[in-house]
Image (cartoon, rainbow, N blue to C red; front, side, top):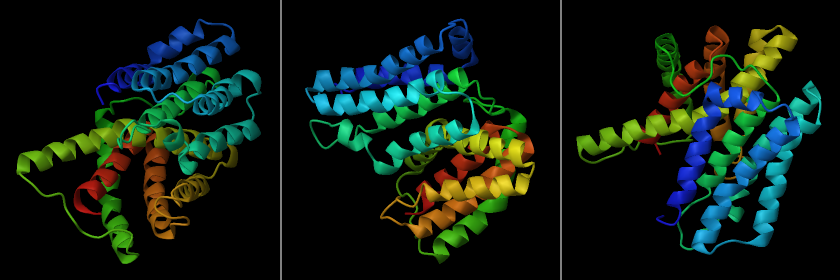
Amino acid sequence: MTAALPAFLVEAFFYIASIFEETRARFHRIRLPRLKAALLWISALLPYCIFSLVTGTFERNAFYLLAMLCAVFAFWYALLPRRLAYDIGFLVIAAAPIITHVFRRIYRSPDDTRVDILGHLMWIRLGIAALLILREWNPGAFGFWPRAREWRAGLLWYFIFIIPIVLLALGTHDVHFEPVSGPWWRVLGIGIGTFFGILWVVALGEELFFRGVIERALIDNWRSTALAVAVSAALFGSVHLGFRQFPDWRRAATTVLLGIALGIVYARTASVRASMVTHAFVVATWRMFFK
């Protein structure tokens, strides 16, 4: 982990920078889309190179695979037109490495430490940058810190949906009750850390893609909020079919219900940040009280 620290610091810098509007403003001054894509591509490969060279785990084939995946992702909107068919293709590419767990085969540790989170962070922020910088997509209110009204909306729909979600998860034996144990200060610290970890990593990326992109595009094209919420929730559930074993219908069903809640939050607020709040509270509840 000491050897991995420089790579994580570099990735954290790129990840945080990808969220800020100032970063997009600076990229906007670069007139050549392919140059923007090239900068994103190089930034995606840099953390892997730092980690693998420091730890002595560099593999040429793994690097080639990573370079190819990141090149397709980074250059997609620099080479292809901004049309619905290509947007769908971009989302398929975004989901494929996560579903197939490809980063576990690329990011290898000299011991048993899981370092593929480095690849997940890279993939999320590369997708965010490609959408917001090259596609110039408008997902609605987006960023790290929700505003007061977004906190209120996210909490309101959390309280409305948490009981149905828990009942469905328990009824289908997707989870069982097993709260985190230990001293109160340790449990509190784990809870706070879990919430913000989910808010700023998992929820941020998933809510941008499923609500800020898919649901927003469906609402704009179909003019039916209910149908857009239903379809985005179904797609959200489908990517969780491989959560444990494939097909994991129990986890998918629970996630579809969560997706409906998140879709309603986004539709009512036009804010990715608001749905991030609901998402983070639901997942933090699961992590703290269920297994």
